[in-house]
Length: 214
Image (cartoon, rainbow, N blue to C red; front, top):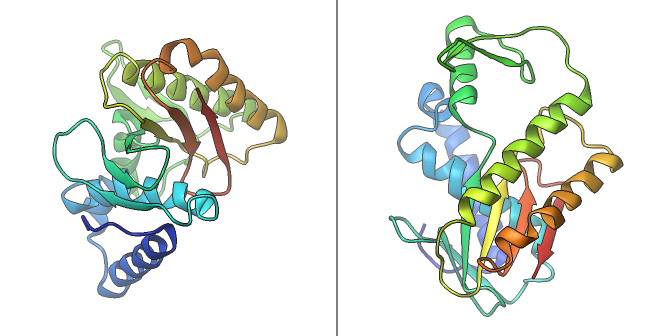
């Protein structure tokens, strides 16, 4: 895994990795709960692949590798304006872990239903009622802004980019939603611009990339 690859090489390797996992049969529970090697796969490799799918032509001569460990970045970069990329995921938190546990136990669950909590803020159920798109997008935006602000409080090496991997699969983003995502980066610029060279928003679909540079 910790080998420098161009975007094309990385995506070939990623597709082969995913294909191998499908052929041998995934451990469904660990995969859904991001346990063991699936944590790295879902929270570091998947986000990197989604970003590189959108930036492959612009970064065709750059090289990337995921780095395991507790250092202040998740991806090392060569031949690029960035030297490092830090990854944060908003698509899987305590609420989503509860959703996946319910899926494993019940065999079905609402993908966008509200996570209901008790008076101690512990997840207790998933609402089955339909939610309007604006409400779901608001939830996604709040998580994105919270993640950016939290990361911006820490110190990182020069020329580090922040990749925010968010849930773009349980709601179809409209043009007005893309504008709101762009506005979120502008509104948080005062926090992240002194820490990160750039911020990227991308999800598992890899169909939309929102970015801003200082």
